[in-house]
Image (tube, rainbow, N blue to C red; front, side, top):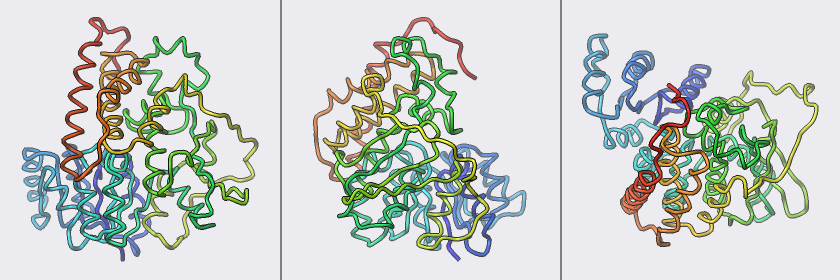
Length: 397
């Protein structure tokens, strides 16, 4: 029986993980949950799964959840809050496997501490590896633990790599759907609305990751993740646009052989792979191979999607530059969603913040958080300078 902690249990990945656990009650058990600020969902999950510890984002929410759980007769569930509470969830002695799925750097400290505590970690949080991958990977190696990617692309790479040794790898190929603006002329980017940008052709995701997919920044983050996870330089990680999103990633070996992984576009499958690793266990998630007709591929247009170019630059520089990339992007995307800046201004702000950030190495997670705060402040200042006085498009509720 593998005992699971979920960081971000009320989010999309968290809910999918709970669905997988529910399908395999003889293999997996929920030990602890960190649920953010959704009190209603947190109480419902805790009532059903009865974790040892439940963490909420802040103290008032934790007080409400604690009272409700006691009224429901679940006095034995310890309710905690904040960053310290999330760390408690991730490092609890009864936990074997931690699913890191909190969006942004909020889950960074807990993920790092989970690795330090010798837990096996399944990473669904891009930001952890983007901003502090060097530190997390080094600690995982020190602990002798494998970091298992849940992100579908890196999960696919991990599966393909079982067919060869790392020294035999020529290139890692990450596929990208191209987002909703693959065929949109660059000249029309200034008039792109929030509603249009949130209309992803393949996946249903949170708002930030959907916008990042539209700018291809999400794929840029994945390039950095691949460099950290698989210990390869950025030059060995290639991005290819594949609108059908059938092939999730490929690995090209030195002899010219290419292994590709494809499956249904259901996040439960990479979650199951990570939870069950190194085993493969039966599931009902079947890809209809007979329906496969054609696959399209094309190179990404980095002049139209400069966020991808900026991510490659950050991957090569490492250290503080990846922190600046992520922080500036998060601030700029939030400003776009609030209609304070245009879609085309997102990469401009990111590039400006990166240009103003000195290259530096990372000594600790605390240093990462300090640099992150500085980059966010700089990005917010740039957003204020650019903010539109009149909203150009209708706000999305």
